[in-house]
Length: 341
Ligand code: RIB
Image 1: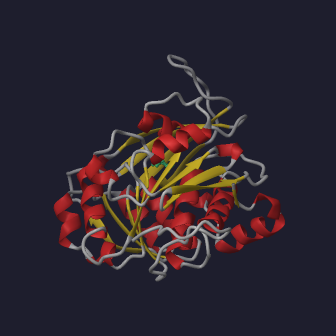
Image 2 (image 1 turned 90 degrees about the horizontal axis):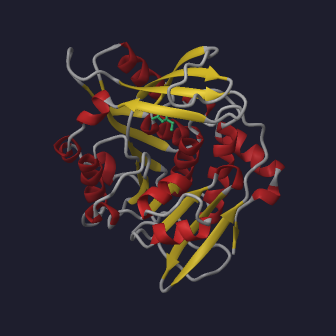
């Protein structure tokens, strides 16, 4: 099933066919170690930074919390170490109403909780991120297959690539097995070559420009439409391409044709772009899972507003907006709603 096709009208394509509002996220939990710098350092350079922050993050945790704040009923599958960061991460995610029973806690002395070293350039709001995956990298296909219910009962399975690809594949296989009917969204971040067995089980591939360029082996400077079309050629039914300050676009196959959506960027004052993509992904998943909207275009609008709002606050999880904040921005800038082209 998934983002199923329907005739090309102004409200197509429809989102998930099973509108339970349940989102299962498979992904990473990291403690983010963040230093603010006036600008990003160049290779070999020592730069005097400013404030140091230790804040909860990780693409899986961020997207799970974003989906929960956008109104989804969310469970998170992942792994943490037996350490303070791990306990804090599970506590933070749980306090957002996310079901944390699918988070494995590794034994004492084994893999530590993942961390991300992040620099945020205060002048441009841009960032660099280096992740030490730790326990995230220990998730096995057998562990996913052991408890398939979370995936099977979800309307949407949302995954990224900070977890082992074979675990991601195991979850996608459960989602697409028999009558499961779970829509699969893969946020291909960080980008890497993906096996066909995984790509053919993905309904919606969500990428930014550099990820699309890496997946399709094209220059990042390529036109967005070219990048999106090349990504669609990899096999998913829908591609969503985020373009930062240029908004987002989506291509959706419907029978023999492809529908294009374009969402202009909402106007905000960005100070920190960390987790903007995660806010987008989690909101997209929650809206599609709820079947609250009649079209991918509306999901795109809300996701785009969530991504914009996340850039107005520091950190990852602390920056993720509530549904009320998202709706307020959408109502205030109706001209930024996604439109079909
Ligand atoms: O997308 C932002 C996230 O990437 C950060 O929270 C960091 O932990 C890395 O996973």
